[in-house]
Length: 256
Image 1 (spheres, rainbow, N blue to C red):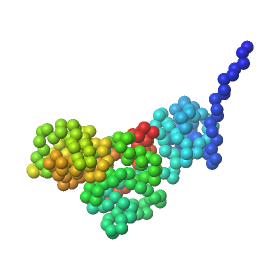
Image 2: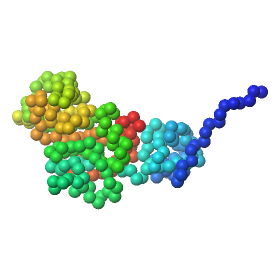
Image 3: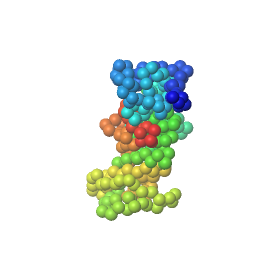
Image 4: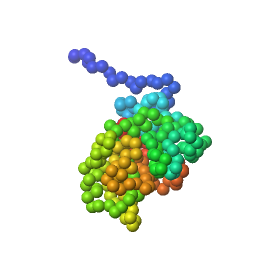
């Protein structure tokens, strides 16, 4: 009989300060420890790209864990927050001009120091994401990941029928062309109109500059979604922590 020269599959790496995988999954809200053990047994969990098995230990701070193909955030030090930014508030945690700032609304509600994902100018309002996960924040803001953002805007009307076609085709601005992914008229209000538009762009004041260029200046601008996260019925000036499912959806949006 010929000897078997195949190398045995390596065991799961052992991390310093590691914990049982099922305990980490349960702490992240996946289910009871028994339910998490069943997920591992059914090969529905991967750790750092390999199928997990019962008895594995992981480091919640560094391990990349997927359940049924979706990234699971298990590091309890990381926070993910949605805020409905009011009009007149600058997107900064400390403003040297004494204007209303994000810290006025977050205050002591979060123990961790968080950073905003992208910006909204002072006159704009709506959804803002805040996190201390620098890697995810970078991906959400980087244009190569093409995370869609949706806005509801009140603009000077009336809106011509061909405006949607023009915006979808692209409009030339002083710093290059821009085009929307979708556009629709929501309502007509006398000499003004309410429109919804979505785009991947993240350039400064891009929506205001775009609508100004096509002859329909913005009088009010509300961001209603960033990727899979929606503003919903979150009240102005309030914050809420994202659910595990929402965090997983953000990771999925950037292909992680």
